[in-house]
Image (tube, rainbow, N blue to C red; front, side):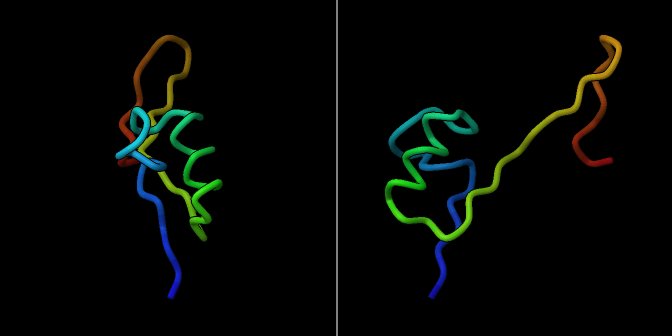
Length: 49
């Protein structure tokens, strides 16, 4: 079985932060993925692009 940490270890750190990602790695998650937004020239682009 493989474990994916959605938004990192979000039960132990704020979601989508480096702290959550590092904790997920320490907790031996096989994959870490998150929700991210792209900003370009001060304009917000949807993450669904």
